[in-house]
Length: 416
Image 1 (cartoon, one colour):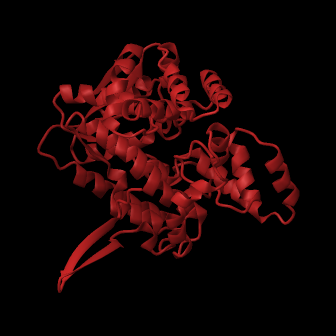
Image 2: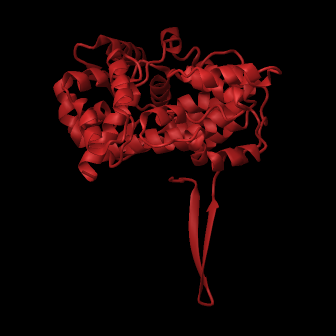
Image 3: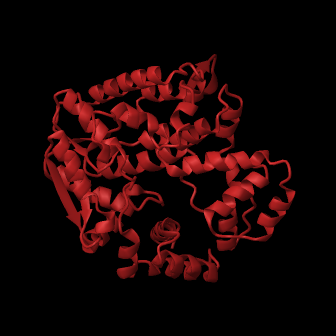
């Protein structure tokens, strides 16, 4: 597993080679609860965020920015405008799939901020045309269906002559923007039940594919609940799908070094663990890998102000409860931007970079690749594989199936 915060040095002394590996930066080294006053927290976070954005606006080539209808991208553009920088913004839309479309909301945000917004529309032909190229560009079976439309968006941005793009990665992990973080915090409380043995037996005897079942089972088994937002297949799901034995909690070995560091640190609030492991794995290994590869495929540099090390360190140094005690996602960021952005942006339901990838995959029959590769490799139990594919066509387990698709693509290209 990659480690972006570790450096290795080689020293030769009297003809003997010495290898030294050490971490040069770790958010867990930040002293917890240095700031417990909400007003002070808001003040220092706003200053740090504004400074981070200011630094990343320094550029000697044309710069643009992605714009959705949400708070993250609008925040970046607001502070850029305060810096007298009016960025060209780009928004993606999907022909005939209004439920995934952010163009209307993005247009409203652009109008409020006084910015020009270019809307790029793609359809199934565009998606399918680009998908093989994108999966090759990623160079590994990365389970992120947003990579394809993002690639097409950068394709247009390059065509218009821009070489740097400002993007909002990291805000969800730092400010607790995923609703599931709050669900996890609530479920953690069940660990304190004095009489839970019968619940442990019940969950072991009554398997469900739904993720909530797995969450409660972990609590009643006294094992680690949160294992990154990037976890799609649980160990039990993999055990049922794969033609090999996957032991319960086998995936923990990939997280153990991170968990050990958390448990030996001065931090104890589980929400800090959520942010820490997601920044190290879900963000660094997933989102930033995708962003870097699809942007650099068009020779575009992506900049991510929310991931400034001083800003992230500040967040790890405030009382964690300030981030979630009112039960509102991105509460601190929304309070910072209250009065700066309209309520319509601050209260808008999170969409993320959703897109009709499963509809495209099914209609184009590209999805058949999964069964084709499985017929050659015998990796999966056919009945369970068909079950996942059938549920995806109805709207459930879609990202599970996309993961199976990109894995099948990679296997066919590199191993068969």
